Length: 347
Image (cartoon, rainbow, N blue to C red; front, side, top):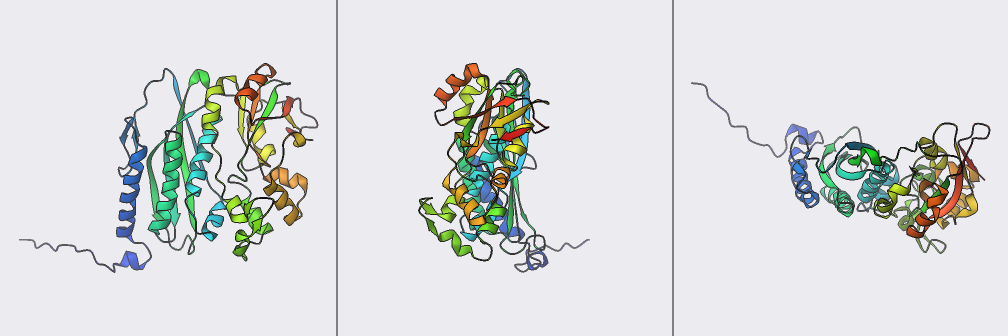
């Protein structure tokens, strides 16, 4: 008769000594699953904890799924220096929601990926609380994700945060930019600050890696400390734009690469955007960055959103209706034919 040996968990097993604590990770994942249940609706057939999230899609005639993936970038370093992690989860979700909104899509479900050198339950709990808060705000289900311990890949204290979103839009309602013509208006919606781009340059300008105490300095022109300003959450435009999507020909989320990197993505070939930079008030944080870093104005407009987080393209006949519904929107320019091959002209 074969004898069997009962395998007993060892508090100091080899994997834990190598830097990966499976039991702690399992405990954290169970906590995340409980938190995520608050975002789930009747369409979710299998949520966090299973091998795959399952979502029943119904109520559409010709549904088109729209997906996107993005991260928070080195804004994570600012959060780490301030030991505050509740805002970056909101940043992550809002960034992804804005991206699929550019196609006219409604968010359905979200997945997150958190990777770090060593599991830190309190840190993860704060990150997830932000993700859940942002998901609930747009009725999006946190359907799954991954929490990875990767010693040797991530140095002590460093981590990464990535989000994956899936949304849906009726095929007839897709904003595909094909109807954009010369003379159409460009409307800009204000950002809430840097959003999630340009932080590597900001860290260099203020020497934050070597002197993190600069984050606690109060600036009168900001009305707050530098750290508080830099952690302003990435604004979500979903609720304000949802009722007027049918009036919009094109939407550009102004993220990495600013105007030059994002507006051409929605312009038909042989068309360009003409932007009047004095048509809106540039927020104080951007003026402070330029002054401290002695940066060229052209560089500022290449890197940062400069106070405009989303650009709408519409016909002039809908301009009045849109500006009435969106009182904070600014007329910042119009669509033109390119000059010397330039797709974005900032004057």
